[in-house]
Image: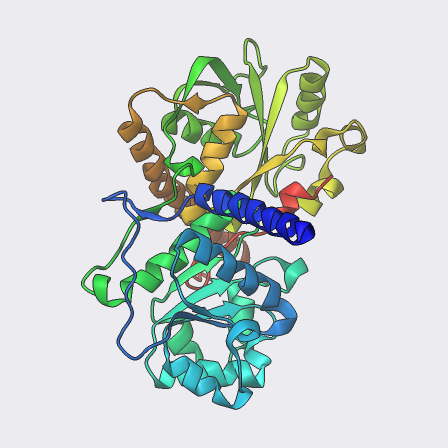
Length: 411
């Protein structure tokens, strides 16, 4: 009897601990009201979201998507085969009883017989769709164009040209939540309570992109002229967060930090950069590294830097410190906020509205930079090959050149 009592006591203690942990997990809120969204579902349907994926390259990711979404939006009903599939012959019925369908785009997805059944059933039933792309090659990912090429041609227009919400699957929490918010917004906009709205900005309490940050101490960031792209990123950070000064002098001078901007041109376009980084490390000048992931801004795999960086710097431990990933689009404000924190920014006491507004405005500025870079590249190509052709943008969306994990696992 005593043993039973002790067992029950431990069970209750464990339940209390789990309940407290769950209570501490922030949930998604609507930006305009700061309140959780009101979930609703069409009469007769069972699930808010159906996860369509191929096991070999999507199972782990969609399992994580389901668990994280249900923490962020309590009450959200999500179909996942390992939890809900009773009969493989009833896939079309499961689609019928779902309000929205998530297509998890990874290598092999469009070659799977059952995935194609789910896709065709979704399209035949005019179900709203949200596209989630695996972009990490190490996880079965690819560019959107490569994934589209795997898709049967007759299905491509309805999947890739209808303007469905699209996001990249991320594994680092701060970036992953941006992707999850994109999914939740799409789910809500096709639910009865929000059908009349075209957008529904969402937030998660404590997320870095929603925090007003500023520099309380004098902070000067050196962007070397030998580091192509560093000045633009440094000025973007300074414009977004108050209190940061940017120096573009030939030498760091009184700078407190050096920005090492890593893209395809780094350590290649100007030999001076390697010597400047070496000297900064000798002088113990704090170096903050930013890894560009936007292909239109020279984004590349992190592995490239082990090929082009002088071995002396690599051996000295340059890449033992974390390089912050710079992603485009909705993920970009997170990149800026994390870089600002690395430079010493702290929560601002006032001016929060202005700070968040500047953070949002940075997306538009970065889009302009992408356009200018594309136009410049197109001009150079046209002049070089004599074809007189025009540059074409990437398919449907800008996507990162490498996963966020590349920046975490490069040591």
